[in-house]
Amino acid sequence: MRSLGFFFAVVLILGMCTYSASEEKQERFIVDRFTGGVDEKGIPKGWSEEKELGPQSKIAVGQERDLPSVRLLSVNDAFGIKKEFSFDIRKYPYLTWRWKATRLPKGGDIRKRETDDQAGQIYVLFPRFPSILNTRSMGYVWDAATPAGTAGTSIAYSKMKYVVLQTGTEKLGQWIWETRNVYEDYKKNFQENPPEVGGVLLYINTQHTQSSAEINYGDIFFSAQPPKDLK
Image (cartoon, rainbow, N blue to C red; front, side):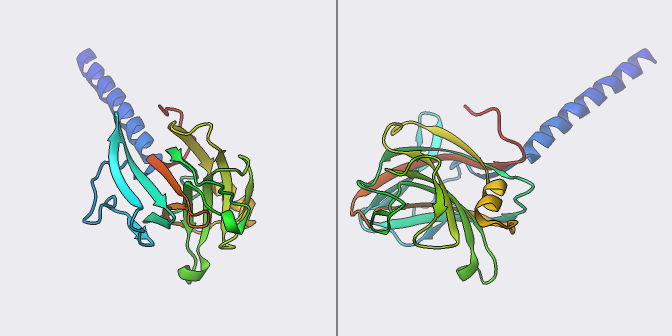
């Protein structure tokens, strides 16, 4: 009986461990780690182009040390890549990603129409019918001049809200982790409850300043709680 009791105790402990690991996995919704290769256009699999690239602009998937990433290079251009999926943002309210800017658009400033260029732009999309006219976007930006913490509405599109997280050249060339509560940011900026998430857009533009910019993105994921194990 002792041995049988011991056996059941071990099974119970292992079962609890398995459940915990499973629960931990379920607490995250992975957007991409950029380890799945590229399609025939050189775009990460599962993503699509948002506007065709100019002749000097590039999208490239590579690896720096042990970190897979996607690189966007814009030369007097504006484009992005989008990944579509759907879930209730209340289930996974936290968006986490890491990015590294290596070049900012010269003279870029999101506050002015004539200089509205940024290297780093990540948007969570919230489509409403008709989506081509009614999609809301909650965005996070690396700007060349606008102070970090600035929040506002896009000059180009009134249903696009943003928060500036990084500004200037001080952290160029450094990988930086970011985490935002998208659910709370959406409610604060749109003054309404969000619909279901429809996807994520990575964007870059330099056409207003007629300059160039470059940004890299690593892991991107949503989670039920703020992550504590970022390295």
